[in-house]
Image (cartoon, rainbow, N blue to C red; front, side, top):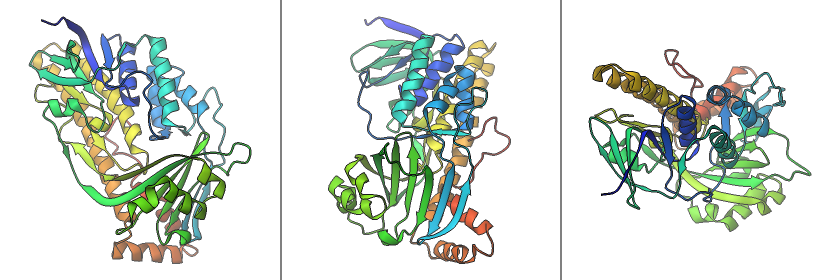
Length: 409
């Protein structure tokens, strides 16, 4: 019989959310380990999450003093956001803030490659003494009233009182816990392209959104800068030949229509995605021994940076719930502690899903009603300036979570 390695909590997944959970557990002195399916140093494609809100930086600073400031200092702040409609500027706002070096105040956001975000969080984990096990895919969970037994594909057996599933969209933990995603997956396809910046002759730091870019046949295009690079989102239309746009050679043909042609030789990643507005039917299992976090719990469209910025409090509030459960004096109190954490985060996820739905409705090019609203707003923006702000904020949906929640999302 295989030896059982025991911890109070096992975190499955060493992406950013799993790293944060491991760090929060260590800060609270809870016996834990982070188990990751991939080997250490595994290649990670693309920029993925590139934006951390101030609320996320504050959370990280609380569980690891200095981490929020490190992430803020190593990213960038873009001071200007600009929105155009069929080539006509309808909204611009200059925040006038680019300084991210204030040692006493966290920036209102930071933008950097997810690899860099993970690197800084991982370094904080090492400094704190977080335990990692790499190259250990989870095969199955046996969840009982008293805890969980986890078995990896290599045959290693782990026992824990609680599991935090931070193992991504194809979560084994979610499946083994009998939980599943609910919500629509739309047919709208978007293309995301990463390019490296020309540091000797960089573009101005501006987030720019084009409704129906004149050079792209009515397709929406967004440009978002991050440290030493750019992300370009292109909305594809129904009937588009994906290969024509998504193949690197295809990207090299259309990208010079919307950016300086030099960036066609600076492409580092091309990927497609569809709007997923899915949330797990519960963030905990029937026995209240498993909590889901991050993309194991929800998938949102990238507009609005809802994914990782929801995953940060998923991890931290999940750890708080587990800490309360470990201290509980009765089974009822224990279950209630897990329920509260799971319920709060699911309410937040549902709210974020509604925001994604709003964004999708705003962006869909085949909605006659929304097309008319956008056309009218763009034509009247010089008379009613707030219509420009409506156009600018449309792709993101609502900004903040409901007031009864303990954190901003």
